Length: 488
Image (tube, rainbow, N blue to C red; front, side, top):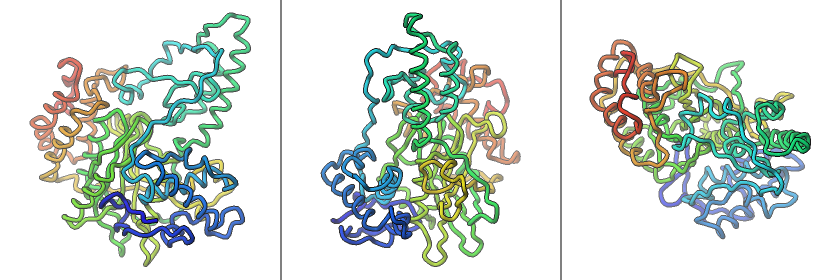
């Protein structure tokens, strides 16, 4: 079966992966590297089992394309092939390598079946909205609720993933005062008991969800490489993350110094995507264009970035899957180094100065290299362990000549999108600071004080007018600034 990446598109990594033939009876070297858990001599994970899973997914994709092949559908015909997480990791690898789902039309998952006899549950006013949801909510300003598999009403982002606050869900369900039930008093006890049982099931489901957040560990010894990121790349990623209520995604271009073991991120390239508030898929055509731009300037792909619009900059199980697959694809044969970093932008912030977005970098170490007694408990179904990578900011004293022009193009590209953010809204309900002012403060923080005036002038002349015109749907007075920094 001949498999390519839909035209010229290639998977992420330092070098493009050539077009190759997938032999149903053999396994290529890159497959052994990407799914090596099946090639470690384990009795329940054998090369034969991997080939059975892979061949089944390829056949399903050939029959289904261009419709997106989900993990659930890919698993449907696989029996006695091991745990669902291992099968899901094969799906993730094949997708990252563009062997399946190249150029597919993304489909949205549907909520579980309804259960008769379960009435709507209304939340109290104190729970109707939280500060960090204001930037991440849809344009209606309301969180949608759906029924889970047990027929209970839950918030859609908690059911499908997103900010997986499973422990808070259970605590709320245990507190009956937070709910108003539309049932008679004789049924209250049974209904509360049913909701608690449903909450326990939801907790177990979210614990193994691909959207579960996995805190990063710290390297006990030296990291595999050092990371440097330019201030211009940070500012562009920050802007991109603020423009949409849904997740955004892009690639990072730069250089890897093998002798000094330094990944130098010089520019960020925002990509088109198919995304929701909880997940994001990169458009293959955007990836090809990013590679063309990087190659024309003597750079290579050294990482990727995406946003968490309403929750912290901590990788999810899905992020770990993607990062691990990308690292494998760009592994250097000479020294087995995987010079590829993952970056997460969280506009709500909270870890640093007020109003400044959190931007974190992470790297995935395979379980067999970072094994501890509680790995299974800590990382759920992820095949690797995320580690925090500290980074040095470069170029803080010099604003690149083409940066503002790139930002203008980015704003104009997103100006007509359905899920664009309303920057006229308040950053937090308890403050007068708007999302636009917060964005300006956050981008300004990336630069040294010596160039603040130059940056303020560029924002005032070119960026702020465009943002007010296309991303501020409130009144003009709402976007007026109360601080000198926000007047930029």
